[in-house]
Image (cartoon, rainbow, N blue to C red):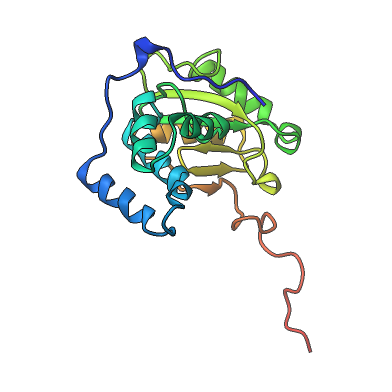
Length: 204
């Protein structure tokens, strides 16, 4: 576990309000749960708040979500600080990169991906690049071990990466033309690289 705190006050906006479209969406999420169980919609609504707020969750947004769900502020803060899917300080405008650093990814080259982040974005995690477009962090398992190494950018994963292919992924985001998510080699999802290797012929 890591220590996760809200951004300092000088970075916090004074207020937060959902757009009309997002407010309607949030209210619809609440209706999915029985009376008295509205708190179950917290993660989904926090995620929408993060998407609206340039990729991070502010203290004001946490308070708005808590009021919507009739929850104590501390309860929503606990959720926001527990899950690494929620960013607690400003991130890159075009991409926030989460590099998986768990054992399978490290064995397959995650260290190279971290080196790319250090050279292209910022030497240290949780810092925004000079142009304001990128930021990065190292996280634990993102659930695509068979396609290691991999990263998550916003809500999409990019897998089977090398230094070179990861660089192309970043190039795509820089040009507002990100590549297709998923494996970046000849592989369908988590199927064998290069296609099936067994049961290729019809059985008699």
